[in-house]
Image 1 (cartoon, rainbow, N blue to C red):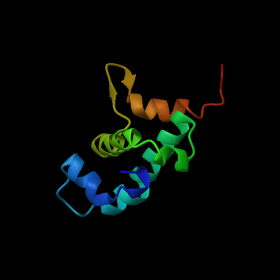
Image 2: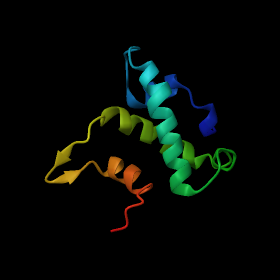
Image 3: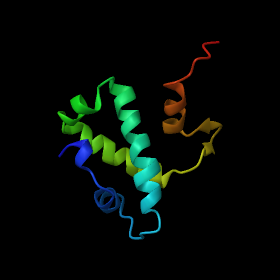
Length: 95
C-alpha cells in the first residue's frame, strides 16, 4: 500500500480510534503533517515515497502517535521528541 492510498479509516483502525468526531482532525491536520514529516525526513518526493511501501507503516504509526500525543508535553524537563524533531527540521537559528 502507498502512503497516498491511506485513508482515515485505516489510521483509526491502526490507532484503535472508535469515535468519528476526530475524523476531520486526522484527515486535515495529522495526515498531512505526518506525510510532510516523512518527506522532509527522507528527502523524497511524494511520488518516490509512494514507491517505498515500507514507509507506509512509518506514516501510519506517526499519524497514530500524533493523535495520541497532541500536546507539547514536557516530562523530566524534556520536550516531546517528535514535536522537537518537527521543529528542528526547519530551524534556521543555528546559534
